Length: 150
Image (tube, rainbow, N blue to C red):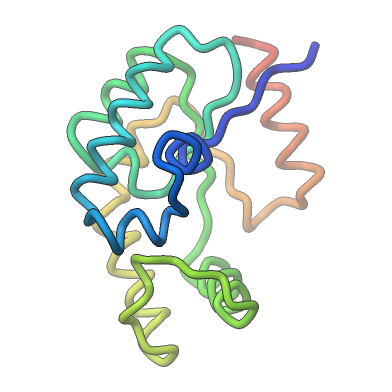
């Protein structure tokens, strides 16, 4: 059966009327994280997939809250894979507030540092899927299997 899909960033855009970049530029990251937390809590009992950004589990007690109130899946990737994706995204003109002051030459080091800092939060997830070691179809199949066994 089909599950409803919600993305926390899209919910923030709908709630605030601002893009994530504009929200953070105008109101700051702390306000962004507060609204993100509020929307996360409002989705307690949500019977679907709630996608969150990489920073979500790292603020407040979000990681613990998510593990307590839902099925958590960490989509892991190597620094090299993330660097390739983020560099391509940047080349297409995609704005990512966290990366705005990072020079292209410093991007890999920045990613490695953030991944290292965030890993303890990510590792709280009940399940882990390596997106860089599997095809998109394999990742989807693994996600579907985990969701069906809920």
